[in-house]
Image 1 (cartoon, rainbow, N blue to C red):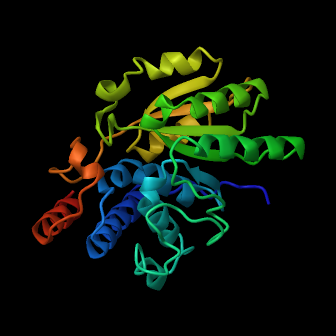
Image 2: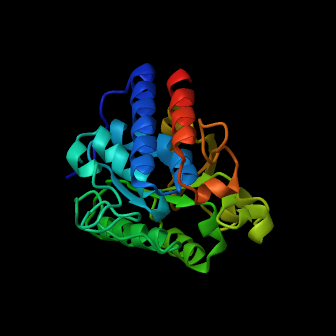
Image 3: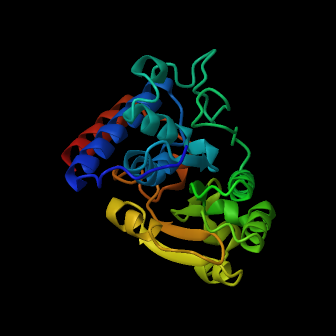
Length: 266
């Protein structure tokens, strides 16, 4: 079935849904006593925008450690129930710390191993092209994944086959598991390197749905559209923002209450 745009969402309505999703994400991670909160908060705005703007978009979350943001976005759209969300990271759950495949049609692949999601999305996009389908395939990657060769191989493949219905969203929050991306393995100007392969590249504020939606409408006739989303790790929670430790840490009770208060008052 072709993905069709919904009526343009009212900005305030979408903002309220994103705030609700943030609150539910924090609650879910706090109750499960697990981390990876920072990277979830940096990409939640984009995932919510995709799922609340198009009907059943095909989204591959390559940065699988942000599974919480994916689950909450699907919950917000009525694809995952509240009871299911309560099982996050518990024994016998389908909602594991990284996406498990076939639990929902919206999660076709496991993406716990970083650097492979773009290859999977590229394969889906090629399959659609061979069947003369024009439905977009969206792939959300971390900026750290662009330090891996498999990601660049997928870009070369997508460009060669002119997969212009492939939309690659890069969550460029600048922080990965062992420090900043520039300290771990600097890539310099990522946009310039990707343009060197012939892809269309646009930079946007990754926390602004309107900017992202406008960028996604940009035609790309030579190959995939690459959107570099400038984001903040731990967005919306002051003590988490741009802090490497929130790639890992769970919240204490006091931290959870502070986080909730800050998001509610934002």
